[in-house]
Image 1 (cartoon, helix red, strand yellow):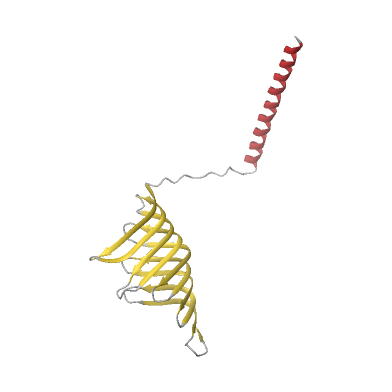
Image 2 (cartoon, rainbow, N blue to C red; image 1 turned 90 degrees about the horizontal axis):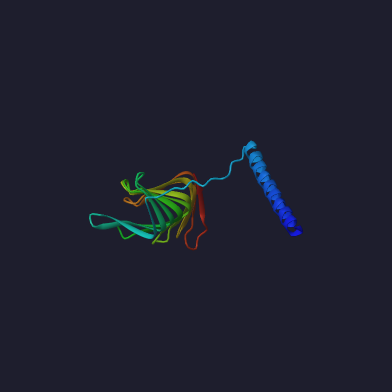
Amino acid sequence: MKSNIRKLRFLIGIIILGSLGLVAVMAWRTMEAKEGKEPVKEIPVAADLQLNRVKYTETRDGIKEWELEAASVRYFKEENTVWLEKVKATFFGKNEEVYTLVGEQGKFNTQTKAIEVYGGVKLDSNEGYRMRTQSLKYLAEKRELSTPDPVEMKGPQFNIEGTGLIVDLERQCLKVLHKVTTNFSHQGKKPASTSL
């Protein structure tokens, strides 16, 4: 009989502790709601297609214009958009120039063939020219690269810094748009500096 009374007390104790715990959790959630705090919700974004290690080549009249590589991609058919992670794009000029663009993330429009790259963007040419910025956009119909962000460019005999950039791949020319500072250096001569 004493054994049954102990079991009953133990069971009642468990029920009381469980009830107190439940009341405490409910009170905590009620206080959190009154303070305006909502639990963080992750909104799932379901892609129509997801792939890893992708390489896509664009040609025009049988000539390779550019290649796009990414560590992973998510394709959204309704938006005609492919989201890219760890992006590498290679653009081919008329006279065998090669421009390699890399960045952390990007976006590719499957209809317009526009490519946007973000985060630690680097553009290097096979002729020793380098550019650094935060974002860069490629417009396929114009064969043009552009950014509104600050840019830093280095070549064998110059350094250029400024804000905003347009590169015409067809005509092989570039234009830095604002706050341009240029340093020229010739072998054996003191560097010259110009600001615009």
